[in-house]
Image (cartoon, rainbow, N blue to C red):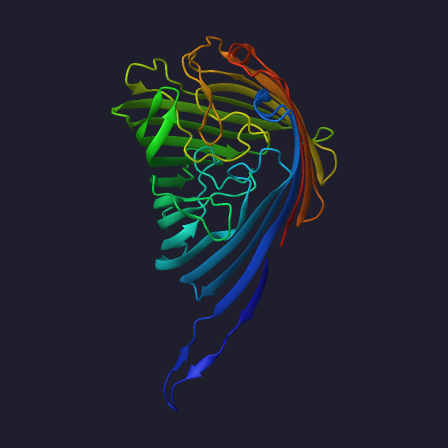
Length: 423
């Protein structure tokens, strides 16, 4: 980001009177260009075109104005373009030109490092590691929200209270609008307690009202309340990220009783060749055990990050258990390679499987197998310089018994290559 400083002057009211300082005004700008090529062989296990290759283009440009230390105005344009996909762009593939962010920050109170700020307008939301709320970096078009926030920093706590509606992506020019079928609100707090050395704790409540929700159990209005806790931190060798969420509420006249446990643990051997980091993720998200009892047990991941389990985005964290070992190897200071494998099972053999946004991919009503399948992949990242990176990934998915009982069940090959430039 480059900054331009101007208007640093003093105004003299009259001879003999005090000099009144004019607030300093600063401007800055930046952006991103990302070009991403994807190849699928039997996408969604064969439900889509047998072979498909296409280009996803992302262009983003933002500007910021600060007036003194208490006022900030931020705006960002986005353009997402899809070229060559046989079945046309997916919902998050294309948005020709629109406002991604446009908000005003006003600092209501400030004392040293403590402050209270109000933000209003269109903005990104991202909390924790993005398991439940994220700006959706993986897909071509990122997610934003329309609404207001209060951001408090006090006594070592960071607290974020918000009330928003998701911005619905339109494919044309300046046609995004608030989604009036969904309302999203909550409170998210982060603290570094003394009893957790080099660690942090997140405590949060998230509320979601959807007028039209669909699960394997049926369709109807969903009012869901999520209460969660996350412990995370890093030492010289270890890093950890553990999260637990319970969900209650109402769905189509019945109750909601859902939950998830997620974990990620890593260990880096700094003195060994290639400085390997060994990682293990283990996640479980509840499914509905009885589709006819009037109580919905399917966990809802709300607005999760893209590329949740992989860049191929085959499965979402709903009615799912997975075990995901990986190893990161530093070939050079700027190049790293990460081979991994991920194994998937249904948490409930009565419920179906879902996509990242929560769409029902395949009903579980006529299949009793638990094992969905597994993927193996390898990703190579090259940080060419501080502004430019190049990434390549290959993934192969091996279908399991559930997909054989509830086809299609074809093997999936996926390849992606993308270059990103930030300024």
